[in-house]
Image 1 (cartoon, helix red, strand yellow):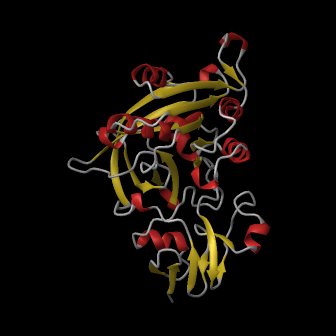
Image 2 (image 1 turned 30 degrees about the vertical axis):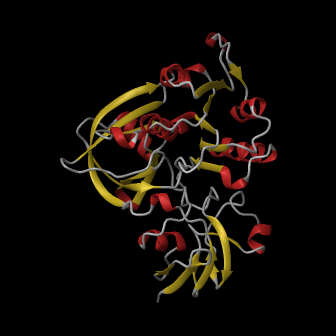
Length: 340
């Protein structure tokens, strides 16, 4: 049995198969709704159910409260139609027409960037190219119908190799393999591109980019794309890690700041070690953002990193004047099955 879904604002219509989520059905029909984790954890896909019935699926309370659900909210990455639906959802036109594909690739290089971060460089088959937007991610497809999501650190214009920044999670299914048994020339498969975390280029507002740990990967892609295409909006990167040993490729943003007058860079350590002899900013990265920008009413904020950072940042920037619709984030949720 199929159900018809109509987006109220645009009039776009598509059908969902039995047990298919609203988001999956939309993407299958080439309609891109805002989304990120697809696990019911981050809340990016949250919209409103205008009419019809759904199975709300599994989701985290932080993504949608009981009060929001009572007011008609739904997470479309989890919601399964039980009837025809009319919904209110954010559509992302920039990603329309970019196909989501399953593609084979080969591991070309494994580069240790930090004590617990590996750069995995992947090459597609001869003549193949992945079309994607800077900031999007791919899913590495594993045995047992499991998958792991990683942001592309590569900018679209420099895609000879696709770079992933992978943090070693103890006991992690895929990250453990990357740090122990994986070798050059190994074959992998992935699905992508995925997600709606990318720079909105139809705006001239100043941009604040916030990265936590390997959340630097999609931010790197966004910035390199912006520099290559001549975007001149004021951009300020805040990158937070625990200690100096957790920084990697940090000479890159320093070089960008020298080369581009409209770009600024701030590194923040939350728990610097005594041997770091750190004279830079300390504390939580979202606190550094607010200290420098107490009024965010004119800005756009793009953030990627671990869920606690994203949650703290969301509350802080909204409290300091940032409109909800100018906050874009990619929350690095761990997989629900064991490991990462």
